[in-house]
Amino acid sequence: MIEIKKMIETEEYPWCNEAALVRVTGGKKALTSVYSECTDDYTHKSLLLLNGKPIVQREYPECSTCCALLAKG
Image 1 (cartoon, one colour):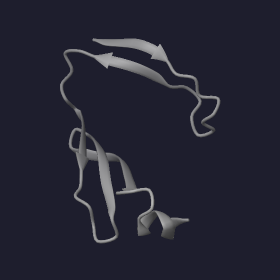
Image 2 (tube, rainbow, N blue to C red):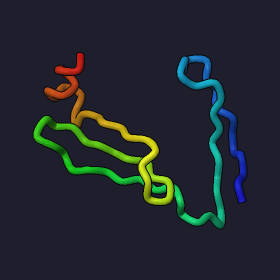
Image 3 (cartoon, rainbow, N blue to C red):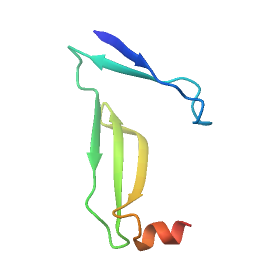
Image 4 (cartoon, rainbow, N blue to C red):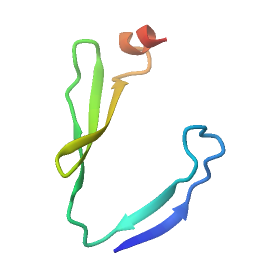
């Protein structure tokens, strides 16, 4: 069962037209997340998987002043 808990305001996000906070009960655990350890350039990677296949990848710095963030500008 999928229940929409709240619609999220998206005016300040130009990359998003609509967003909702949902609650899923009785799901099949098809959507999972995987996080990596910190790499040599002090970044982490996270993957959003659907049935074990990556659909979204994110790379983010370990801290706000680390070399990865400063290098990315």
